[in-house]
Amino acid sequence: MFKLERAERAGGFDLHSPADGAGRERTQRVAGLHLFGWVSVFVGMTTSSPFVGTARSPLDELIGPARNQRLQSAPPLADAIVLEGLAKTYPDGTEAVRGISLRVAAGESFGILGPNGAGKSTTIGMLGTLVKPTAGRASVAGFDVVAEPTEVRRRIGFAMQQAGVDDFATPQELMVLQGRLHGLRKHEAVARAGLLLGIIELAEEADRRLATLSGGAKRRVDLAASLMHLPPVLFLDEPTEGLDPRSRSGIWDTLDRLRSRLGVTLVLTTHYMEEGDRLCERIAIIDRGTVVAEGTPAVLKATVARDATLEDVYLYYTGRAFEDARVAA
Amino acid sequence: MTAPAQVLLLAQRALVQFPRNPILLGFSVMPVLIMYLVFGGLFEGVAELPGFPTDNYFEYLAPTAILLATVPGIGNAGVALAADFQNGYFQKLLTTPTSVGAVMLGRLLGDCVRLAVQAGLVLLLAMVLGAEVATGVPGALLMIAMGTLLGIVTFGAISANLAIRTRDAAAVQAIQPMAFLLIFLTSAYQSSNHIDSGVLRTIIELNPAEHVLRPMRELMLSGYDWGDIGIGFLVIAALGAVALPLTARNYRRAYS
Image (cartoon, rainbow over all chains, first blue to last red; front, side):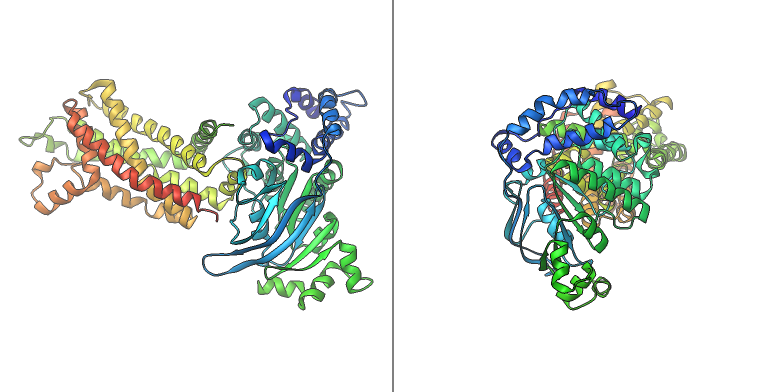
């Protein structure tokens, strides 16, 4: 019932990205069919409700013009994210990232693996405009992270390593505020928050204080809040760190569904090899602030041994066991 | 979304957040009310001293109570800001197309409204106890505005900067008693003319809070002295000119 109501309430969906002016064209190119994809996810999940059945849902009717628009839009850029010699040295002299160069294709799911302290969070922080690089350059969705941070922020979702939620707010309030700060009108933000809360299976907790929710639920709310403006690029910093296996599996399932149906560019950091294997099409292994290996999980494993795991790959390229590196960090 | 609209949204968030923490709400208002009642009762006889500006000590004490509500009261905003850092929400806000300035002004505006309401409650209590505001409602509003602004530019700025630097709510809370010093070293409880110690009178004259409290008391007891009111706002503006850019700078550098 919830999903049907939410679908009906979604009548005010603004299917346009909040991008403006010259930026819009670039966003459309980077996003490719991502908006169509986003709506497909919502529709797919909504129509899976027994209350909706096979009838054309209100969302179906809403997405028609948007689908045509997306199909007519320019083909996506090859690279959604480009890093060229990106480096960060903190004021205390710590060289967290030492000249990383990478390219992430639009729609790709890319993992940055490494132990704690390897430079993963600093790297993703620089891409998310939270940390200022001290050398090199990076662009996200065609915009420079230093020169055009606001344009970058319009086009990214960022789920933190530590669920960035206000404990005194409710999930609904938090997500509506997030959407409104991204330029959604109030009724659009409310409708979208409802849909997303349904997708992350927290619709019943929509009006409970976040302080009363479990760590896993907070992570899911943080993730959903990051999706409020339907970003073409999604950054996830250790998305399942500290979660129990069930919550971790739930987030993986959600990310799988998003990835398979959206065409969104996904960049995640993790030190769980299993997570990298499960979610990422391509992986960069980072050690002491530099990329020591990059490729698809299969290719990386094949370079080491026939039955190698990503853990073996890490050992091969860094000369130390992954767990040892984590402890050392 | 325009920057002013973002500021309003964030101010609304700060306002909604506060009453949801009953401990914070209770402990920011109750001590002031208790102090007002206890000190008012204890020192009531002071009003009988020759040359004391009023015969109702609760009237004399009302502007002090307003400052007690606003100056230490703003410390809770620093605690809330530190909590935003601790739970990662500040960072989350910075991943939206919202400027750091809007984040800062949003909290500032929310805190201004909250402090004004708290100060209004204290003044209402004073009136229940028989105090009268000589300048009526406009004077009362002016008093509340001066008290609120002094809180923002003094302890508000200190607690915000400490929150940004330490990201530790406990550290911000620990300095809260210092705010009382700012008020106690004024003519808060006793008219300067009746203080024997010359050293103390000098300290009081050098305390910027005294130059805000004085016109507030005049608004309460006698009428508008625009010269003193002007000096009060000049002091607030001077403190703000130092404190607010420093705070803005620290906000901007919170993540770099």
